[in-house]
Image (cartoon, rainbow, N blue to C red):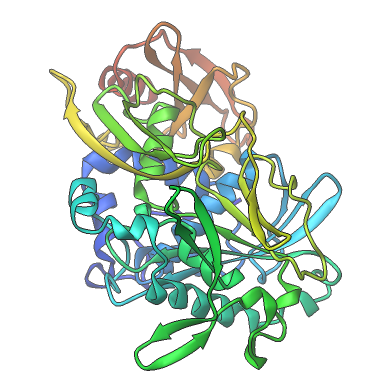
Length: 453
């Protein structure tokens, strides 16, 4: 378990070195659902590099948040995850098959100080609609550059990776519209194909031999080793793509967990794959009235290498969109029980009447602690699976500990438990369970009072 606070102050990162996006999440109370969701995920994440927090707070924010996103997806899909090795990022096992996964990001000229902040679907749809339907050579080449850098590491020759499928997970962070980018540019350069719309309104694959960069022609079809530098590509079993390892995803999933969901009205709109039609469905809803249940894997696309030395079953990542080449045509999975979201926009459209986002760490004697620090002393504090641990606290003087839970019956509620220990004793016992409260502010105020008794 990790003791460090993801948003805590560390000597290596003075304020003037913190990234813009990190400071936004850490200081803007409107981002508390994001912050709490990130803290929860990191509390169970093993930092084998020893520099996760430093990079998260500075120039490596995009890379690190994407790692947490992949971590959340793997856990949700019940993978057994081994984080004892520094490279690659994950050794993950499911159905008796262990795979090695390395995470990377494709970057560009924008937001080098860390992070994509703004969403504006109207501006995007009005001025950049081509990016939803065409293969952009520049974007394709940015992806290929990131993949090549990982290919050169030859992780598959490491003892713990030998004779196992090797996967590279990648997301693009090159402009403000990362959450609207589709897998099309990546599919194009991996397979050397381009999809065009015929006069019959159907879509067809056409061969694409090159991607243009200035006056240069860059060979396409990376899965087919178009040049010497791609000679090792058959060691890559699949490429994982997503456009959702960003703040909007963590905001929605945090809201779903109960993190300040009483205070914000959040709207989500976008495009969703239709398993019965070649054209996607549009959707739009507020999170309190969703039209489908969201999961971490909704935006994941698994692109299978047809020439892989260790090929993966198309059902290995069963909750994700899987794409593979068969007889010259691209095929995809059509599981009606899954939601394949192509792209979406998330925005806080209103704050509920008479409500304010509050900072619940306001007591002088009480400090907020991480989940891992709490669980060092108290395990299995909650047997009710319908109630989720929300945040954890400790009185610096009397050593009492408290935890706030959120749950839902007919409406959302909060409650808390207080734990005490005797002098020179390491174990804690529950001494009080509160009544249910309708708002977080009242819950926190009562918790702090009991922690100080």
